[in-house]
Structures are given as C-alpha cells and as structure tokens.
Length: 280
Length: 184
Image (cartoon, rainbow over the protein chains, first blue to last red):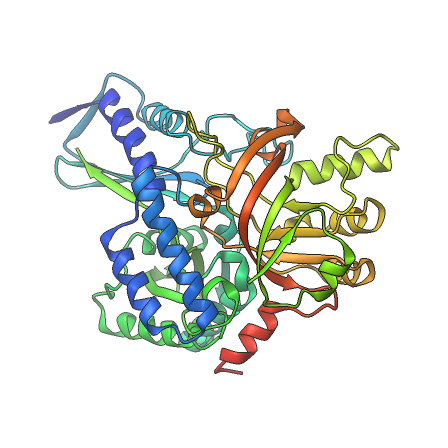
C-alpha cells in the first residue's frame, strides 16, 4: 500500500490549475499551425493567428489564456493500492483549486447556488470525478472549462433506429446551434452509449485525448474523421466569421448501452483546449 | 482598418459596415449579466444609474484579477446573448450606442440596434491575454460587490474589433458563413 499525503495532492492541484489556464499542450500548437495553413478565409486566418499569438503571450507572461478560467474539472485516477493520508481527499483537491485560483490571479467563476447566484469567491467547489484503477499511482488531470462552450453543449437520448445517422445529425445540429458562441475553432467531445450521465462523462473525457489522435476502434476512428469533415463544411469558421476550420478535432468515446437506448452527448470545447496532468 | 474613438456619434456609426475591422480608442465600460440586471432593475425602479451610458460603449467582459503592477488580467469577451433580455432597454431608454462581445444576438436586439442607430462589435473570443494589452487603465466605478462582474471604466488604445451587426442590420456571422458553407 502506497501512502500519499493529502497536502501533496493540494500542492499539485494548485500548480495544475495555473498551468492549465496559462499553457496549452504540444498537440494544440501543432493543431493551430495546421489550422492556419489550411484556412482559406483571410479574416479567419487573421483570427487564428491572433488566437495563437494570445496563447504565446499567455505562456510567456503567465496571464490566463482566457478570462473565463472556468469551473475546475478535476479527474482523479486512483490506484487501488494507494492510501491517501493526512486529510480528506475532496477537501485536499478543493484547497488546491482555491490556492491556484487565488494565488494565480485567475477569475473566480463559481456561484454557490444556481438560483441565488452568490459567488463563492475562490472558485470552489471543483467538479471532481474519481475512478479507481489497478496499480499504485494517483493521476490528477485538471481541465478548467469555460461556460461559453459548455453552455453550447447538448445531450439527446436517441432511438436505436436512429443509428449512426442520428448521431451525426445531432452532432451537426449542436455545432450549428453553437455557431460563434462557443469560440471556434472548437474541439468536439462526443460520448455515445452508456446511459444519460455516462454519455456526458464520456464526452467530457473525450476532450482530454491529445488532438490529432484517433480512437483505436477503426469504425469509431472513421466516425471521427467523418464528423470532422462535416463540421468543417458548416462554414462557421474561426470565431464564427466564416471559414473552413470550425473544429480542430473531433473525439468520440463509446460504452455499452441498453438494448432500447442510444444516448449521445456532445461536449463542445472552445479553441483554448486546456488541461494539465500529473502523476503521484 | 477604421479608427474610431468613444463616445460614438451617429456619423461614425452610420459608416460602419458588417465585417469592417475597427480599431477603437477611448473610454468604454464593462458590464455583464449581474450588472445588466441591476441597471435595468434600478431604471425600472426610477433610481439613478451609476454610469451615464449616453453615446457610450459597453464591453461584455468579466476580467481576471490584475497581477501586481498590471492594469488588468486576461480580458476577452463573454457570450453576448445572455445580455439580450436587457439590451433593448439600454439602447432605447439610456442612449447606449455600442456593445462589444461575441456571438449571436436576438431579433429584439437587432431591431433595437437598427431603430436606435447603434452598433454591435465583436472582438476575439478566448484572446484575453492579447486584448488585456490594449487596456491602459481600469477602475471599478460601480457594483464592486459583483467581483469580476462589477462595472469597470476602461481606457483602451487600438482595441481590435469587427463590426458584427451594423446599424442597418447586416450581420458579419451570416455573411461570412454563407461564403464558406458547403452543406445544406
């Protein structure tokens, strides 16, 4: 049994919050360069260049890439041979988020009650997803998620007879409705199968996969290619001002489902595809 | 690139066309959901507003806190449509002339823009670090209790904008999308 101190988790979460909000991954830099070279609209190209310059500036100065530093979505993959000691796990994560957002000069965007709407002042609580896995590692992923793209996301319980065409149509409908609001070029996370909440979680997790990497199942990889091509024919383009590059990538995740169900969730990610991870 | 200054006069607004790239300098005010709701509630209750909006431009933004020695933190646009329920009143009753944000607007807002000879500008969503560099001064002038949603008075220099909906109702998104659309 490996022991991990709660304090260690707090320290790592604090650092990951700031890293995620100020630095994008290598895969993103490759994707934005590809987008700039492929975009045909002159205005769209300009928009992509500014988006890239902004990311460079954020990485160099430590300013947030976007002022909407989001809800802090935290994924914990906890090895079953890990024992967290010295404090409450959830509180340790929230304390890390609190310190990251306060000490990192990130925006506090959480209201305590969805109807009364008073800001909690420190961006807690985080949205925490825990998964128990084999082994003795503890993997932490922090994925700050802004509301512009999250509010444009959607979920639909399709009928099995709707099949792949039904999925494709719902993805396109969701992207069309989002239009410029989700800050394109977007990344699409699509979750198919499971039940209501599983499909949504699959869609969210799909956003964590590196850009440019396809699903291992050939028919799902094919669906990703097909969706990417169709989404990039909508004409929405960078910032919604028209162009070829509406999405940087589409990632699909699937899970077994009920004989009578075909849930599909579409989680839209803005161009600032923010996530940072560490393994303890 | 068209260079303009605030406050906006009708001569300036009349020559702006959807998709024009504009560089704006001068004073603008921030306001988003909470500040809009409070201003409209105050107006309807017959109370004085903390800011005179006549001829002014509102920027839909909730910035990050300023680091020591900095004017402001990351400060890009938020999604404008959330302000749609409040905007027609600001245009018709309070003399607001311009808005800066991102994304679509409701038909009611477009109608009020045309009727009042106002303009809706877009700026680059998710480019908060880049845009913050064009903000030279920032101070909270109302509703400090709203935190990032307080009303700030900003002095901007060469702030990059695109005309989203011009005073004639032309829409940059619709026109841009139609040019590149390949599916029906």
